[in-house]
Length: 358
Image 1 (tube, rainbow, N blue to C red):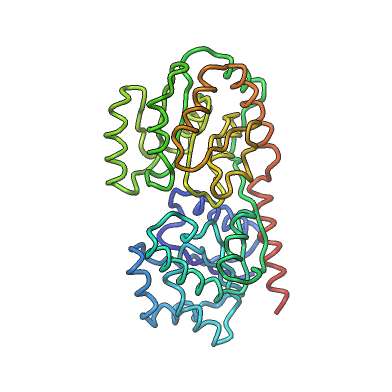
Image 2 (cartoon, one colour; image 1 turned 180 degrees about the vertical axis):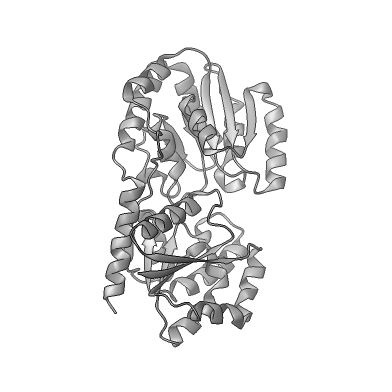
């Protein structure tokens, strides 16, 4: 197959969505397909909307000599006019890879109305979909107001040497010392670090430490979180962006992963933590519930509820037997999910079927 993938910025961008896209491209190329990555510049949302008044983007996509055009749905504000031009010209089918909808996040009412309108128009203008979760598929169908033909290809959490043996997970949970918590995610409001820091102010059932690994994509938010964390003393450490190797080591020496996002279209980081036997603490919003079995491999709390989160963390800090049981449950839960090779193969199989429809 000859394919193009439309993204913003670099395919090496650190996020779960870009990791998914990168793994898919790698698999397609290993399978003998050609994939041309079409990179559009990162700007703000209004500037992306202005791309629709530039006929050059439509001409650029129309000039591609490919069988299918893949688009990361993140690019939706730039592609409304270009996709209309492609469809009028009878160009190759457009397949949107949807990680989560912007309109599924928390926004002010006027912004939410704008995002819903723009995203709905985009979704109705593509032909097929690759979804990362059942939750994402349901959100797309609800917003588009129609069935969304596509495939759910669940992300994976495997990386070379990533999974810990169950015995090692149990031994770590039985060790003494403070409860070692880790937050992994970009420093932005949606990831819920503010809820975690608020909860930790009332976690007193036992000693604890928190390592925060992530890029300050929202500089103002990051500054505010550092100011809050100063009130918790040296127990909180900001590590910034970490390498894959450092992340593996960080997860392996931690006791629990806490990412109380207000919304996740999937949440690859939960799986990455479970590979090392970390109980995952997420929220009831979005797709975290497709990964975390509440009370077995982690906990699900209401989004934004610091008191409920503190209750869970106090339980883990006070009860090493509970921590061991949950750690073992997390490690076993990880084995229920596909590898990246299996995920990408499922997506490729669907793309081949779409191509055969012509």
